[in-house]
Length: 145
Image (cartoon, rainbow, N blue to C red; front, side, top):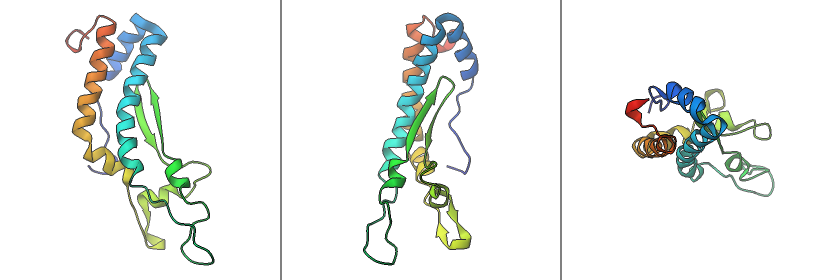
């Protein structure tokens, strides 16, 4: 999977609009849940490949807070998208670990991108399954949207 590539669904904006007209907040919550389920698939795979570090005594390559980077991985979902986020305020080094830092001779791990690329087919199938379930709950299907 190339840098910056995303899984996109053509016509999703139109589906969200129609669902909002029909079902209001409940429909938006249902679509957010569908996005959460598929983003969780990326999360589950990526979590096992994030470096944890070790607590070594003294100087060296030990980490002050082993596992903090792994704990910063989280799923975010809304009616129009789902995403997996790594890092945050307490883990400002997450981009350097994920993307790399050539000046410091740090090679990027890109665990989230690899998890997305590796599971792309399964994620698409699961998303369409979830979306079909939401659409059928509101009397729609992909053909009449």
